[in-house]
Image 1: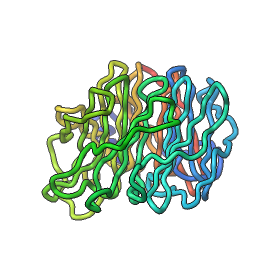
Image 2: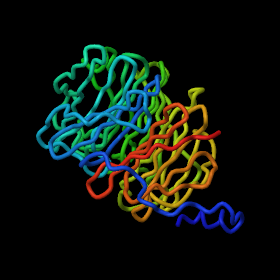
Image 3: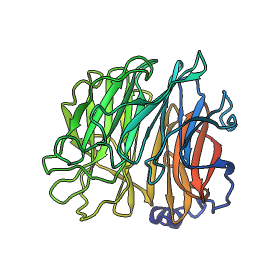
Image 4: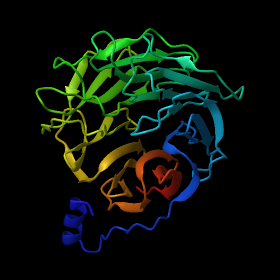
Length: 351
């Protein structure tokens, strides 16, 4: 049980968190499911299985997904350690980004009006540089999408590189270096997160400076053309010789402010840029979604997936790991992986 929960129970014994019940519903066989909600509340899902990329949506019913369909097959598709397919969606387009084992990053785009997926479109304009496989994509407006990833170009050191599409993912701009660590490399095995709205684009990543592996946030206010603001998140630091393989989560509140969640040692924190971090729980693989009813977080610890709304007591969803969250109306949709199976749960969100 997370240490923070033990403290809560000691102080407020009636706030007892639920125990794991394996209540999640199995959807399909696969790995690393990711969900996102569009502005209308439709939840879009992607995951990988062997070399195949799958997609499903809820069609307005938060807990009920359509049967997953195969988008494409990609030789060497990577689906391990949060390196799986990523997804972003608007009223007009759905974009899924994936990486293969040689280090190339591809996008597949669905024109929702035409109902047809594009072929693979390579995002990295230098070949074979995304070998670590960590990447993310987010929508900023109806047809604008931003992608970012760990990239080895130039000097063989990992840096944060990004690109933008303004036509629904069908074409992508020349790559730009978002951040290059003065220490040589950013953390090489932690996921990247992207959140965007209109001209504001935020990229969260774990840095590697002076032996510390802390979370940083880059901000562009000109639609991803420049990133003049890059700041460390939180006050504390994590001196670590190796990589924790845990990059955290990022979301924009309804007012457009970034909120972050991430791990330091065995503690999970939530933090807004420029403010001290607040302990959340113990665990790993924490993720975040934000909406009118507040923030919802999910993570896994010792093989159990937990979900927490705001400051409420966490709820155990079931056995598994690597959760992903989307908010749709008054419901939270959580998906995760359990023994090679895609699991889901829809939970009502109360203010």
